[in-house]
Amino acid sequence: MTEATAATSRKKNRTTKNGKPRLTRRMVMPDDPLVTIVIPVYNEEKILRTAINSLMMEVSDRFDWDFEVIITENGSTDNTVPIAKELGQRYENLKVLHCPEPNYGKALRQGILAAKGTYVLCDEIDLCDTNFYAEALRILMNDDADFVVGSKLLAEAEDERPVMRRTASWVLNQMLRYGAGFKGTDTHGLKSFQREKLLNVVNACKVDKDIFASEFVIRAERAYVRILEIPISLKEIRPPSIHLFKRVPSALKNIARLSYLMRIKG
Ligand SMILES: Nc1nc2c(ncn2[C@@H]2O[C@H](COP(=O)(O)OP(=O)(O)O)[C@@H](O)[C@H]2O)c(=O)[nH]1
Ligand SMILES: [Mg+2]
Image (cartoon, rainbow, N blue to C red; front, side, top):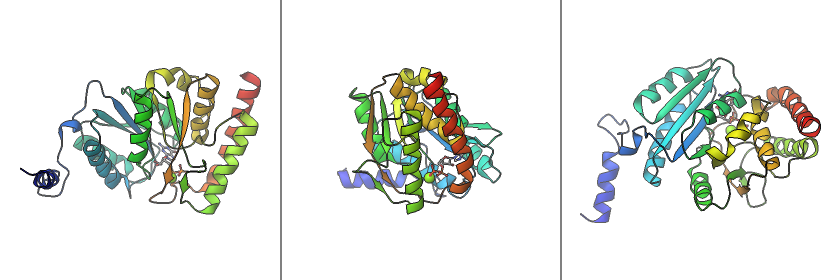
């Protein structure tokens, strides 16, 4: 069989007659996965099914890893929960976690603590960026860093979000730098790390909601973890599930708390 015929036959075999993705070897839950992909979700009924189906296919086609995916949902009021359950039944290597209150930080932390992979990748359902996975895992497996942070604010990054959101990210970063002593350019979004080396840092974090992700990176800096920021191309497939303005009061409160913890409590 030529390479082209083999590729066509692989493509054909990826779906069943009714168009559902066929389970491949790597869709079975591994005892000891190399990689865990953690994705917090909240009210994502519109994109959850399609995003997860493409992600499962893309990761198993593109990488030679045993992997698990953890969807960590909390407080959704739309059909996210039944869709997540259905996906959990379809893919053996997909776990779904729930808790009642909408809280990005709690959900992310819960997902990281439940992960079994040697390496953890934190993603978002509107990104599912496998280019970041490839670069981050190359760095971690080469032992060039223990923590890779995807930055949308580095000069080489591409950020296609509206100007208001790009400005909000810049302002948040300045507040973290002046308030909490952060030295990098971004804390929110894509990250990947050696799980065992970062567990103590995750467990030391005290702030939740959006600012948990910032505390995680800042505490890692202070613990002298080898962190490497890499530029990302940010292209969201929909606007945020919670409007920017609604997030501001709790973000400000939690930045103040984080700054107090970092400057005064240590
Ligand atoms: N579990 C959980 N996930 C959330 C919450 N808020 C946002 N998310 C998820 O976090 C990811 C990023 O959220 P998004 O709305 O795109 O905000 P952005 O990070 O500012 O772009 C998505 O996968 C969301 O579904 C929440 O309160 N709980
Ligand atoms: Mg987003």
